[in-house]
Image (cartoon, rainbow, N blue to C red; front, side, top):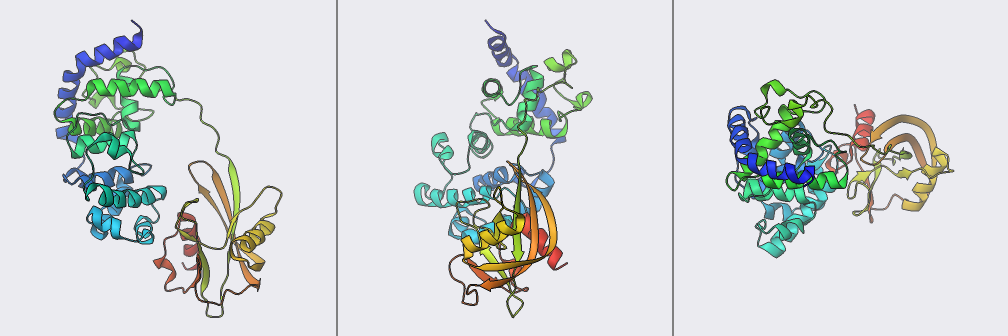
Length: 366
């Protein structure tokens, strides 16, 4: 019997004790969060999607406003994607909003407007992976399934002294098996929430607050004084650096030319200023002129630089150069056609933009 098999058996033996201690602690110490006061599967689903890659305090106002604007799955499904992206604006990771909107339409079309309780049907919806499915099934529907997010991985890696890189596939499968052994048949949603809360409040990266933890009597890392070394971090690939350029073009009425990104591309469906990525071998101004010609069939002159922004994304770091410019050739004076239009200063903020474009707008119109 290898160590992992022994740990799985020990987890099964300790599961009831762990659940009892953890749920008692959770009842007394949990944060009062808006999604913890509802039994609506849609609202719980929304919270889980928003909490991916975004801190709790930042999510709360978005969550409340989103539910006011789209109170049901059917309301969300009926809404145009642009309205959904606008409601999501500045929270980042916009694929979450696109997937949520697409999934809502599938739920209405294929499941009668009710979020499915079958795990396979749930995971077939866009944007719902194993963790999100586990959270919805356990918290919204009371199913005894685990929900393993980053907090849970960290807690379990310490609780069971897992000394292998956490980003390794075999380690993640092992931690998922541990979670399966621990989740109780009753109160699974509360248990999963408590495990995540423990990671968020006490069993934090770097310096866990072991003195207040309800599980120190069981924690193998605490017993071995290795809690500060766990979890083991694997090597992270360095994010590549890219350059992009954008140009501010105005017409005689001081309106600004904006372009809608392709729905299936980077930051899909959001609006931006003309321009794009600078290809290897191009200067910034050459790249900007080439992108304007490719996407709008416009020839532009690039004048003085207005500002330079640094913006981080999941897979790369971006430097965005912003210029003022004028149109040399092309016919942008026609009414909006396709994916571009002239927007007045008063109307431009009605359109959904990424964080970088919002920073440009703030610089242009402080």
